Amino acid sequence: MIGAVNTIVNNNGRLVGYNTDAHGVYISLAYYAEVIKNNHVVIFGAGGAARAVVYAVAKYFSPKRIMIVNRTLEHASAIAEEFGPKFRLTKFFSTNDHDVAVREINVASLLINTTSVGMIPLINFHPLPPNTVIQKNQLVFDIVYNPIETALLKVAQYAGARTISGIDMLLGQGAKAFELFTHHEFPIHTAREAVLTELLQVKENSL
Image (cartoon, rainbow, N blue to C red; front, side, top):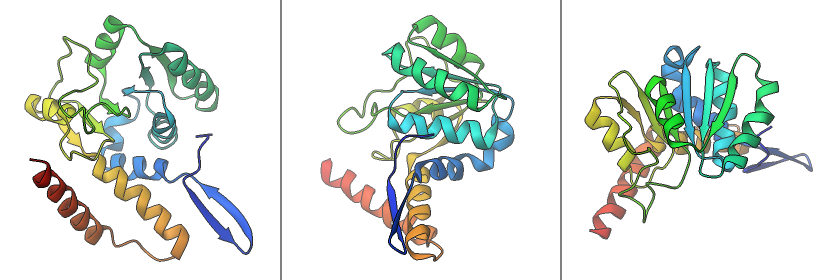
């Protein structure tokens, strides 16, 4: 359903493909399941990462509504039309209209960025339309993990909203791939420390 494979396991000569990004999304959002269920979600972007995010959010958290916001409406509409019949508890919509996006963002419980906006070299930008006001009761998730605190997360933190870094998705999808390959539990706490140390070192070297 996601349409992409990022992990291939040799199972006695038979190659089996998996997409672990969806697991990364689940791990990132599991603690907030009650915040998401039966509520509104806005997802920025309509690329491959967006498909994994839409799939995981719809499958595991059953929101009332998912709005996909993207500059190219056709791409967002294609995802909404494809996933809608498969997850009937959730209504899917798409838009590239500024005013529609702002209205939907204002009532959403969860905002997710799946675009590259905020990633190096676009570290001073975020996908929020002008005049958007993040609220304290909202949850903001950016799948970008470098930098650790993106411009979107900084805006959300300043507003008092709860935030989730892309580090969680990175570790979650990596953990699933590791377990598929080795059949052993992934040392996620050790890995988190190593990733944070590496990213902080990269940040220091770029200053």
